[in-house]
Amino acid sequence: DGDVTNKDNGTLKLDGNTIGGTLTQNGKDMTVTNNGANAASLAGNGNGTLEGTLRLSNDSQTVTDKNTYNGVLKGTGGLAIDKGTEALTNHQAYTGDTTVAQNAGLNLTGSLAGALNNNGTSTLQDGSSVAGEVTNSGKLNATNATLSKALNNSGTTTLQDGSSVAGEVTNSGKLDATNATLSKALNNAGKATLTGGSQASATNSSGLTLAGGNKTDGDVTNKDNGTLKLDGNTI
Image (cartoon, rainbow, N blue to C red; front, side, top):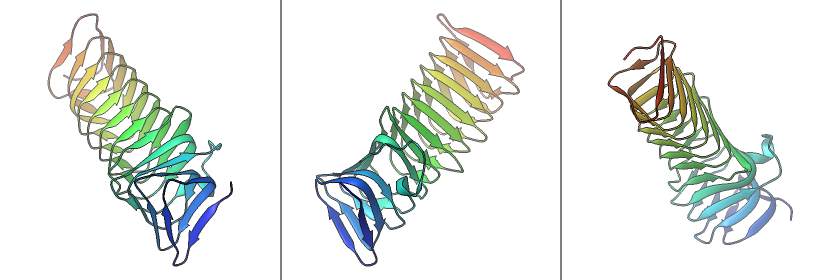
């Protein structure tokens, strides 16, 4: 029910177990096997390996030392934040998915090597990046962040202050982009407002506003029941 702390030259192996408190990795090595493991939160500065999925579930929505991890996790496993908030500050190397549940949150100031599936609240900031595809059905806030593949949004996504998306953006929810760069097409079937910044092209079948110096490098197509508002932009 309490905390587990790995320190100094400690080697910790987690194999299908549950930790009721905080898992702190400050030791030589930590491994989560294919059977996975559960903990309330993850903290510490030491590195580890995810062969399976590490699931986190805590009651705190506030970032503290107990739910901030500064180390690096590698491996083919993944990280699931089922409840509460977890902060990742370093450049993670594990290639499995990072999944954020509806009542959970991720605060990322480092990077993810795999995909991000957000059903809760995820904040990407301070030069953070996601190498895999990003799928959002919750609330996603990206400030000066890099998304290296596609963005699929059915929730609420805010891109601002130099954020960029390298892949296609598909929106059926609400998308607000301010001074963001969309390197490929925007396919909008929801509500999207792009102020400043640029996109390769745009296809709209719902509500799209291009404003405040926004630039579309290619074509803009308004179709079906689409409503398009052009306000100081360039196509």
